[in-house]
Every structure is written in C-alpha cells, then in structure tokens.
Length: 173
Image (cartoon, rainbow, N blue to C red; front, side):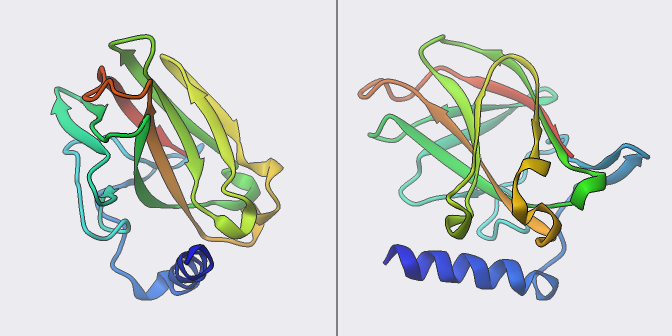
C-alpha cells in the first residue's frame, strides 16, 4: 500500500503542470524570494495544489487568528499533519523559511518534512518560535523537482487532544 501511495505522489509531482495552479501564493515578492504563503486567508482544499490538504481522519485543525494561522493537533495520535504542494526554485532559491509566531503549550511543537517517499521523506526538523531556515540544497532532488509536498505537523504527547495552538505566520522560499 505504501508503495502505491509513493507512486501516486511521484506521478502527481511529474504531472504537476496538468494540475490547477498553486492557489494564492505571492510569487516573487522580491529578488530573493520565490514565493511566500502569507495565510491571508488560510485556504484548505481537497487538492494540495489548491490549498492546504488535511488527511482523513482529521489530524490537524487550522483557524485564522489575525494574520497567523493557529494549528492544533486534534487526532487520537501524538501528532497530525497537513500538506501543500509548493514550488521549488533549484539552487537559486534553495532555502525554505518558516516563521512560527507562538507556541501555546511547550509540550506541543511544529515539525516540518517533505512527503517524498522515494527520497526518504526528508525531515526538516522541529520549528521553534522565530524564523527557521532550512537549506534544501543538501538534498539531491532540489535540482530535479519543480515542486515539493511540504507537510506541517503539530506534535505532542498522546491523549492531549486538542493540543495547544501553534501560530504560523508564513512559510517562504
């Protein structure tokens, strides 16, 4: 089953040009930024190219809280994620940044990874309040792919759902 999911994700990435355009990303706001997702407004969608896709059963809730989005883990597990397909810009735009505005409860945190099974689902780490910068240039696929499936997850202890909120201001590359 996992191989089928991986093959379908690979096919979706290869056929990216046939999918709907990436919704409401600010493209090239300046010479150093390829795109920014400012969450104004937060867009959930059934297709991760059209907005943020939530897995079933629902693992993460998202609510607009001013200019940030407040994510909460709501699953019976110790974490949950949402996903969005975002552009990659090769070596020229090799840095991914995420600004976490606040974490409500210290036992919950935001984690990011790329859902690329054939690449080992690269883990981007635990994101603390402030701006976290990840060098995507360390991954061989950066020059080969035009898009990446970015997953944001709220992680915390079992049995503590809903979790405390994690406020995210923006991801950008």
